[in-house]
Image 1: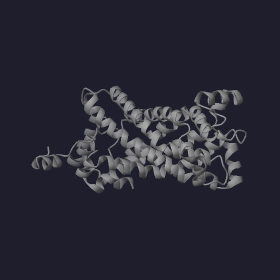
Image 2: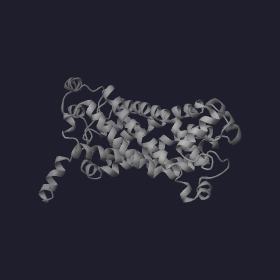
Image 3: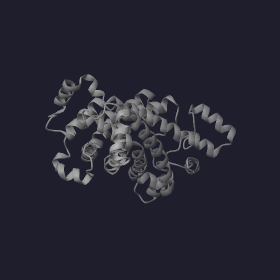
Image 4: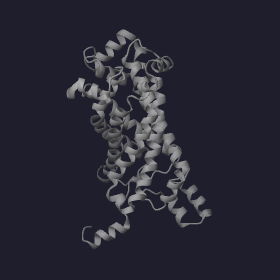
Length: 348
């Protein structure tokens, strides 16, 4: 699958100088070009997609685990607003009842679940972005690049959530059902005994409803924000920025994207949190019971959490690309063929 993707990206808008060398020069010159550019792999190769997946593991697994205390309180605000009044009160009540150790509940399923999700999310996003580019062609890929980002990210997240769902169910059960189980090893057999495999996948559809819009916003908003920052805010071209300066721009674009991510995905997130606490209930049952207003419980803490989370994820992902010398194509530019067409029509 990945090799076929490599074959179709030779003329991609997102191609790197290495790939151009591969298309236009003999193999011996390709090796020299790759060494000169310092990249560890060719853009669109199997190794490229696998390294991007590795970056996704580092990006998602670490960041979600880092914010487990905030996520725990956010989930409890959603499922029991009568007991947990607000963010600060949620922390106080949790610490009073369970000690500081209680804030780390659910860290193991969080780490394993979101590491698997990150591998699929980022690895497949890069794959689908290249694949869909080939389907619509170079000119349309530039003109409709926002739609391309949306389609690629939605496709990637569909598969990523299948990997995430079991550990997400375990995490929420541990965090929102005091006394049920304290660890991953305690929770999994107990959930399996009570509801079978359904316990781990009953929240998949609402998880898709939460994560697919979230990821579409995360990738499309990030890509376009990054493009706009380099065009209107950063005082010099990306190629003239140091790696450190580029990472700062990445973090800023990631935080902006994260705020929008939190808003569009929050109602579904609340339903997922409540659904995994209540046995036998469907997502529709939970949504009706909560009402429209109830589905927005905990939005404030989630904006803080997701904004920080998304910014850190993009920063870590880009940092891994720099550290592993993975090709990092610049924001797409208008193809020369399109420039000529628009110039001929007097639109450029």
